Image (cartoon, rainbow, N blue to C red; front, side, top):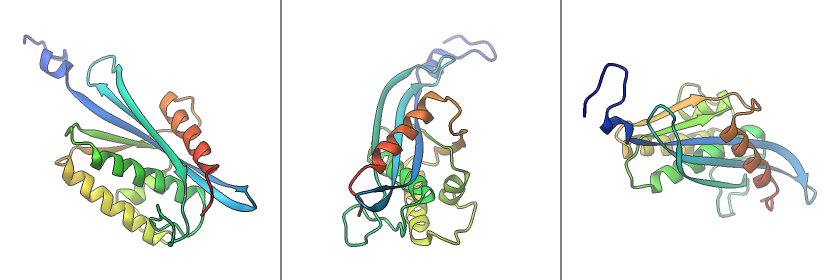
Length: 178
């Protein structure tokens, strides 16, 4: 392929990566109990000038706070922060299940959750949950041979995919609390 500086070659124009947007939703009362939710939106995009979306996946759920219930990963209370951390954990599980080997960019709107997941900040609360997320991060980073990155996106800024992750987290918050 012929290329000039700054122009994509045929081989770079067809490369793909996965971009995953994560979000949590703070507590609301359902069934007389507080619940929090999480959501993620994954998009497979071509690494080209226009970055068209090729395919996508998404998931949502509620934050499980009962160690005896399925899906418990260390959240002690249903808060926005535990929703944000759970969203990253669920996205990392999704990434680990993907055997494509594509590079992944995880985008979050919570600086708290992003910095906790990446090990940049030390937890004072949610220590079990943060530890779980960090173990998943390490596994995913190894799984992708170091091709796992994070990037902050401003929440509630009319970003299409972050807004979708936000809607999924709100939807997940309505799940049966445990």
